[in-house]
Image (cartoon, rainbow, N blue to C red; front, side, top):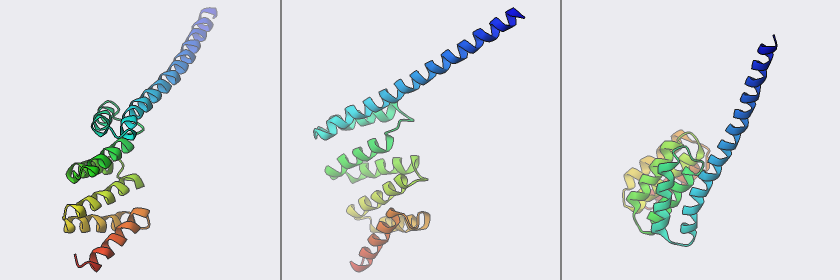
Amino acid sequence: MKLRFVIILVCTFCLNLSSVHGDESASLRQAADRMKYENALQFYELKKYSKALQGFQEYLEVWQNGNYREEAYDHMADIYIRDFNYENAVKMYDNIFREFRNDERGIKAYYKKGLCCLKMGYNLRAMAIFKEILSISLGSRSAVNAEIQLELMKISGE
């Protein structure tokens, strides 16, 4: 009886210890995730865009379930747009849409992809994107913006 009690006590202690260690480990992972993202963000804010791109890319490769993936892709797209590299911006928005398809972040990225298509002169492609946004996310802010873009395209005869 005493031996069984000691075994139960030891097992309970080990479970509690692993639970505390697990919480600490999760907290360290979150801190490392945030720090890796913020390192790239510092380069972005300093307008050191090539280093920022490299840092965001490294973040995305290392943190495949990271908390800042959408932000990293979005900043990368912004850098590409600054360089008039709309094709690469579209790729970043596609990544956001793929990962966050079921919430506003994904729809917003899809809308931004439509804007890039307009800038590249792919008006039919942009129109298809804006119409799809209206069908999948009616009432969202991105849907309202997509509807405005479609109206502007009508007015300009595109």
